[in-house]
Image 1: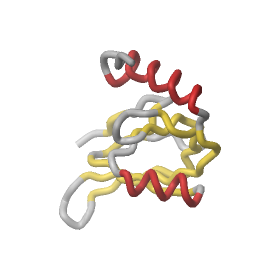
Image 2: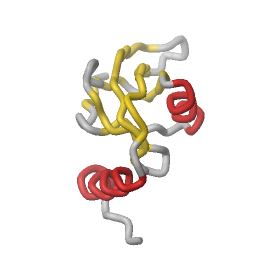
Image 3: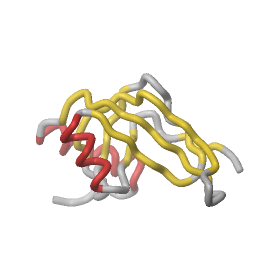
Length: 107
């Protein structure tokens, strides 16, 4: 058991539905496996499941717990600040591949 620290500029969605709700309604929740620490009050870049930068979001809450199945989970509540433009998305996505996700994609 232990907390895993997230990068300060990355909020990566693994679930398309969670991302859709954030973009559609301006508020959303993301559920992660294991205990994680997301800095409440900080603005970060949100990434889609395919590692594309899509928006700037503000983390409004982060709660880690052991659920009824005995699993360590973290729930993160987010507010949409704004969607990224196509150009901003391309730049942020390229930087994220170099810094966080691995090799940069060509194209």
